[in-house]
Length: 468
Ligand code: F0G
Image (tube, rainbow, N blue to C red; front, side, top):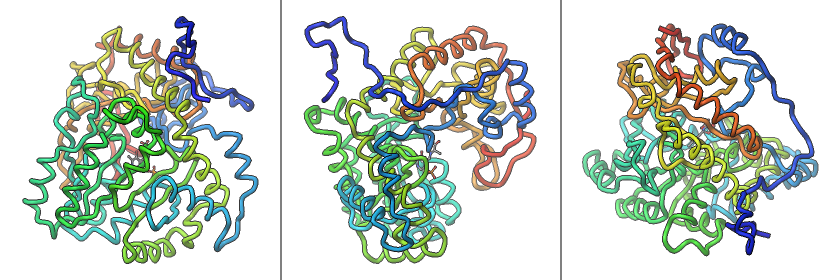
């Protein structure tokens, strides 16, 4: 049964979109005082990644692997086959992935970045350029680790937090053509696109743009690979925002998306609704053979790729649950609901809100903190101390350091509050809005930060900071 847009039918006053599940197993939330949190944050080097989870009240660090699984998933997990080779759990997983994604080869990996590492190890030569709308940080790091260049070609609107556009994740097609012409086809291993565009605000890509990128890539004989982490949320946005898709199921929309591609990387920790897992899909036999050889070296045999049989069972069920339209309506509504509360109080945000998270524009909210003192990082730390909320900076700490070691402010300095799937209820969201509004009301008291120590790659995970 589909919950209609107006749940009350003839009773228009019944308009609340409810959580499409009830709870049968609960997990207590830790509470603490602002003084305790300030001390814990200091001990963690002012880096929320280094906090213990039991020091966090509302954990919005990521929507990755943090979701609640369904009774159907747990039931499937109990029935798993843990055979080393040829487990039935693999064939169920493979059948589900083929049914939705439609690719010839399905290669399980322990999570998304393992799929990325394998793809870039076999596919990227030093100096080659990999265009995308916006590469996620692990994708960028894995391309750079293979000595390639990750190039972001999102449309101009995608870099302007306040500009409204239904598909801010779209790729700039002229920029793609220019990049191919300038770099030369031989210097581009493949063209990628991330759905939804996480680093650009969780913004969707339209079917028309996916089709056009595919056509341009194929005109030049280049494979087209989709970073598919949030494919179900992207499918919902196509259904609700793109002309001609209102009556198409999200499952069929997903199938059409992937019909334009030659492969995908996937983190099943997002729209796979699982706590761990991922996969690499390819149509090309030779590439798949190379990928499986590398898989055996570092992940595992091709019928488990670093996953337990029960993980593959959870993913096989979860991929369909992520496409369930009652779920997607509630999911996207939760994000919009928070964004509406913040917008009403004038909190600057990436607008419209994306699929899995609300992104506050910290640069605009905290103009007294210069880019060199990391406004996004500073806001994320304030959210923790004031409300016990853990969010993540997507700004100059994450993206500001260049491959040559120099420092350049990221195009946007955002704080992402990502929602674990099926975990938090409406009162949690109401509380979260109160925390943000309280900080916004006293925003000139938030202090900037400087870096004390940083590692060579992906510095945000372990960087040590200090308030200035
Ligand atoms: N691609 C995108 C768009 C992602 O958002 C992520 C992970 C990955 C690839 C890598 O997948 O974590 O399974 O290795 N994003 C998480 C996040 C970490 O918080 O957004 P992974």
